[in-house]
Length: 300
Image 1 (spheres, one colour):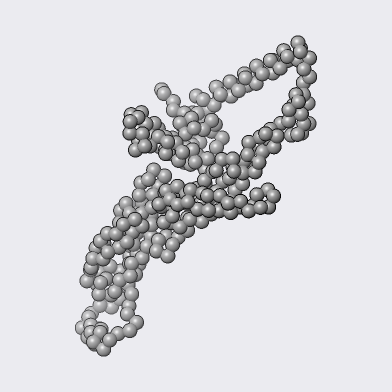
Image 2 (image 1 turned 180 degrees about the vertical axis):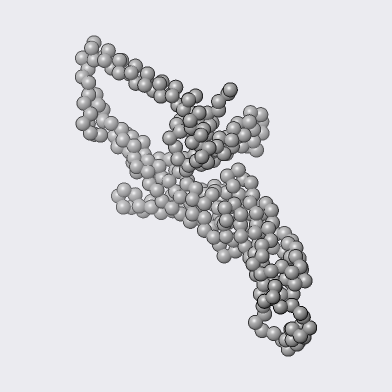
């Protein structure tokens, strides 16, 4: 049996990662090895399949737990044994130098205490914030400017590229733009949570988009063809005869995107509108219809 290390495939060193870290690693790996960007590399397609397979397993909490049990058996325990061995080897080397060169064993009192003449490096804290993006901006991708206070209270401006097809509540990590580290430690990261905001025209429902279409009573009763503007194109929709107000028309593959670029559906709700003002001729026609029609909506 050939065991695939899905964490390694996504560029992760450990299984101690959360779903947001898995999503970020997946997006970076998928972009790097996408076949469309590596047409001369025959191996990229297989690598991309492995990346997609890894994300499918690790992004689901249930399948991740099952996989982690196998991962620990094949990878984790060996890695742990290697880390312990390396630690013991370093300790023996240190004892050797202490014996022959008289170097004292350091006593760590706090994070700023000297360690053989050096201070402990402390990584800076991450900064977390949240920005809104419209459905259109998130669908096509857009650069946004955000302003944050630095540690001195001064305004600092960041340009953030929202990637095309980002998911609601997905996070963007900007490496090294968090709080500064201490004693030469690395800076923290800036982590930005993306909130996709519904527009007046579209509402996001998973990877589907929802919108409304207004119909006159005679359009709903007789059927018609109408031009509908989707998020990225226009197309003709057939309104079936006798459609009811609130009924949905589903247009396949015209919605939002998932992490692989696959499109959801556009769900169009029919809203039947009744005219509030009638000409004399229109009023006469409605009166004539009310007398001749046997339709009673209360008996439907």
